[in-house]
Image (tube, rainbow, N blue to C red; front, side):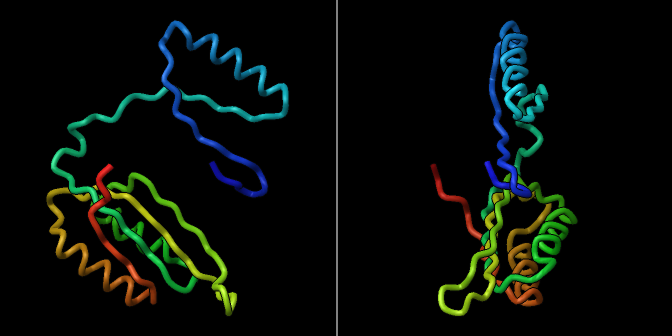
Length: 142
């Protein structure tokens, strides 16, 4: 859920048996009468073989905000076929100075063809070039 352009937005994944799908859609149409915009789309589960051998990593990026940080990091990951599973970013004001501070957290899946030591080294170089800190770690076990 997020506030986007002054509008509240939510994405929800719901599992419904096929015989109940029509009833769910009818109920959602009723909500649309209350000024809520709703879009539905049937989905399938992810092919478990697709990410076989991939290594999960968590990226944390932080530093003074400026244009292009997300673009630079995400393009780097795309060029190496690293799958971005989730990404959140925000800009907050520093407590004393009010300077805009950028932070981003992403969960990624690194293919076996990408050496982790090289990935970390190259991300650190991007961090230096962008004047941000990029931390790479294994995700916490749930």
